[in-house]
Amino acid sequence: MDMKKILVIVFLVVFSNYKAIASDLNTKPRVIVMTDGEIDDHSSMIRFLLYSCDMEVCAIIETNSIFQKEGHSKENWYEKQLEAYEKIYPNLKKHSPDYPTPEYLKKVSFIGDEDHDHLKGLIKKRWELKPGAKTTYTPENWKDTPGSDKIVEVLLEKNPEPVYIQAWGGGNTAARAFYKLKTKYPKDYKRALSKVVMYNIWYQDGAGMFIEQNFPEVTMLYCGSFAGTWNYRSQPNTHDFISKNVKNGHGPLGALYPQDYISEGDSPAYFYTLPNGLRNYENPTYGGWGGRFTKSDKAANVYVDATDDGDNKKSLRIWIDDVNNDYQARMDWCVKSYDEANHPPIVKINSDKNIKIKSGKKISLDAGKTKDPDRDELKFNWWQYKEPGSYDGSIELENTNSKKITFTAPKVGKPETIHLILEVKDNGSPSLKGYQRIIVEIVP
Image 1 (spheres, one colour):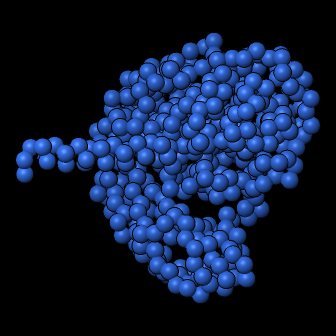
Image 2: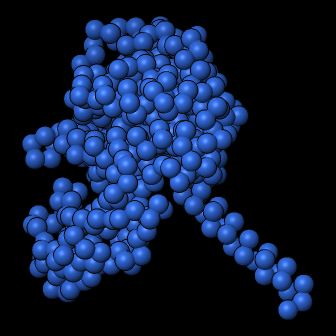
Image 3: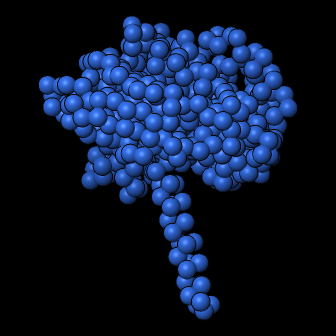
């Protein structure tokens, strides 16, 4: 073979690999974080930075809230974290080439609304800040901020992919951005706002209700179930975990963790966007690390915590151990080589993620091509996640602890959906899980 043909083949291989990588990058959830800088935000941000390789971070914006009226951008808590991230960045790259550079994270960091006058009269009405509540709130005469202008910029882009805006504190910065889009860009604002999924850790200012009532194009998620699962005093048995696996012996970022146990009330907002196979972010009703939601009857296009088995915290609680094991591994990535650390299994199933099948038909699903990056031993567990499916019954799964399962589609009178979850657990340290959700539509 002559040299010209060899060069052509090499080019085609490289170009093909580039396209595959680019495609993967384009499917990463696009996120904008708004943080009021509360002490548990500091803790959530440390974990967030270690998962920044799995998201397209469009902006990180410092704001205020009814609990943190002045905000905390005048302090350097966030800057210290970025400095620590810069020190561990070379080691993180050994585990994932997709970690954003420290320079990029600095470039997409902004100050948003920290004007305490925009919170007047709200402190005494904390429990009234909820979906469907009335509001006389308006950001009409407010000043734009670098944070609100960045939101406008991102939403005006031609990229049609969803933008997941996370309100760890207040949402005033987003409300101002949405108002500007509607008044200054009337031809673009519906297209721009229809891309937004806004995950709210409570409504911590008047923005939530204002957005519901004035921008129904925005999908609003109202999470109250973080309280009792991830917030203060919810995981008091994690003192040893934080001391051993985060604060000590895991580099300068972990050493900045400000609390003595896991207290991260805002972390579910980005757990929701992680592309770990559970497909949480595809639909609020699916459920995953970031919880599960149902449609509110109080406002249009608004979702609230799902109550599963009479418990509105269940959809977050069932994943806590998996999430923290994964965090332990990420902290190891800060200081350990690839061979010394653990990485989750890569789950592969021989089917599309969405399947349509007729009642009475038999189907087999095979995860035989699942691999572990560290060549650990793997255990398989298939289970039916009943709550997000429309089918009310249980299906019989054969060989749930094997790579391959078989089941017969039940009889239905109308199209129904069943959600199947495959968990693959390795025997590394810490033990990690990979997932894949298969949604089966059964037709009569």
